Image: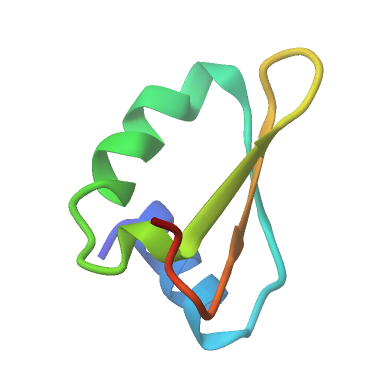
Length: 62
């Protein structure tokens, strides 16, 4: 399991509250994120400069 997968699992399990992804790593991270069955539970909020902060929501977005 790579680092992004571990971080996503930690976020899902509540071990961490958020993941910060820099714009240089966004596409690599997104490839892993969209392969997950619970993809719609992760919420990304874009910040200035291309940084995205992901959190895990109990209710899937539509």
